[in-house]
Length: 109
Image (cartoon, rainbow, N blue to C red; front, top):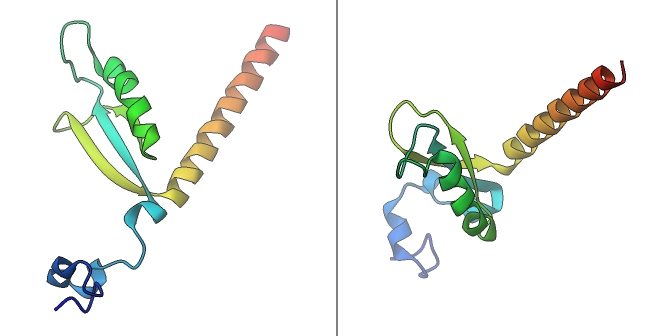
């Protein structure tokens, strides 16, 4: 029967109770597509270009793309908790602010 899913999605009964969430995954997590920094589609079409082409489509769906050297594979899809994404973005903004302040101080000095 479909007791776990209220009869709406009986296939969820195949999963253990700990794997069935009452909230959709994307309400608590954000999808991140990681493109291998070494990825090449052609001689000129590299990881940066792949990220630039995919970003508008992913953002429309609440996901984002980034580039990083991966030990194996060309792409990696992750579900990252929105809380962790917020903390990471705050760290990046703080680091960028510190770098801007240092650059301004260096230019003024």
